[in-house]
Length: 418
Image 1 (tube, helix red, strand yellow):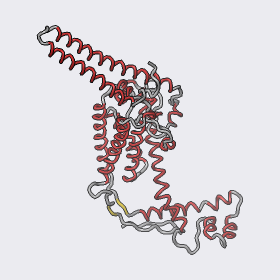
Image 2: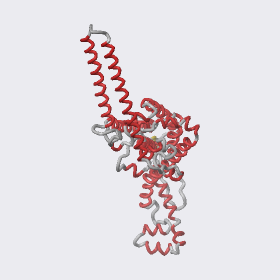
Image 3: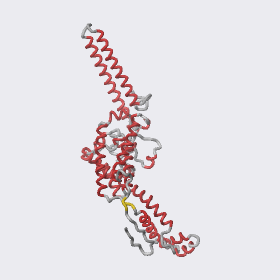
C-alpha cells in the first residue's frame, strides 16, 4: 500500500496497491512473448513474400527479376537462413537477459497515474493569470464575468481554483486519462523510432566509411545485391547485435516503455525491416505514406552504384537528407542495365548447359556406332534414349524459364533486347 503527500490546495492523489500483472498467455510469460513475437512476425511476413516470389503473383511490382536473384547474389539461400536464425538466437538471449534484470510487471497504478497527470494540469493552470496579465487582461475581472455562464472556464482563468470542488474537475480527469492511455505512449513510440533511426544511421554509415568495419562486418550483408524478405537480418552476428538488437533495446529503455509496449515496438520494427528488404514496390502502399523509407529506397543502397548512399533505416529518411547521403541520381537506366545483364548471363548459362547435354549425347551415339553392326538394334535404342533425354532436358529448361520469367512474358517484363 502506498500513500501520497499532496501539495497545498491540490486534490489528493489516490492510494494504490501493486499486484503482479497477469500474463497475456497462461502458458508463457510476457518476457517469452516479447522475445517470440518479433521472430514469429519475421518469418510470417517473409514466407508471405517468399510465396509471392515462388508463384510469381505480383511480377510487375518486382524491383528485380528472378534472373537477377539467381545471378547477382553472392550467397546461397541456405547460408542466409542459417545466419538469420543465428542472429535471432542472439537477439532472444539478449531480450530474455534484459527481462531477467527488469522488475516484474505489475498493475494497480492506473488510477493513481491518471490523477498524477490531472494534478499537473491543475498546477499548469496557475500560470494562466500571469499569462493573461502579461497580455494586458485582468484575469480576476474576466473570471468573474465568465463565472455565471462558464463556471469551469472561469475557474481555469482564475488559475485553477474551483470553489467547492475538493476533487479534480471532470475535464482534468478526461484529459489526464487521454494523456496517460494514448498521448504519452504515442510520444514514447515516436521517440523510440527517432532513437533507433539515429542509432542505425550512425552505425550503418560508420560501417561504410571505415574500410575495416565494412570488410570485417558489414560486407556480409551486401552479398545480397538483390535483397529478399527473409534476408533482412542477414548480417555478421556482431553487427546484427550492435545494429538491430542494441538499437531496439535503446529505444525501449530510454523511452521508458512497458514490456507490453515493447512487444508492439519490436514487432513493428521487425516487420518494417522485412518490408524494406522485400524487393517489391507496391502502389498506394499506406506504410510508405507514413514512413518514406521503403523497399525501393533501401534497395538503392544494395546496388554497387548506391552503396555509399541511403543509409537511413528503418523508418524515416531525414538523416540522409541532413547528412547529404541521399541518392539523387538516375536509377531507371541503371536498374534496366542490371536486369538485361543478368538475363543475358542466365540465358547463356542455360544455352551452355543444353549444348553440353547435346554434345554428350552425340559423343555417346558415336561410341555406340563404333562398336560395330553386331548390336545395331541396341545402339539405336540407346541413341533414341539419349536423344529423348536431351529433348526432355530442353522441355525442362523451357518450364524452368516459364516459372522464372512468367508465362507469356520475358523476365524483364518487356521485349528482350536480344
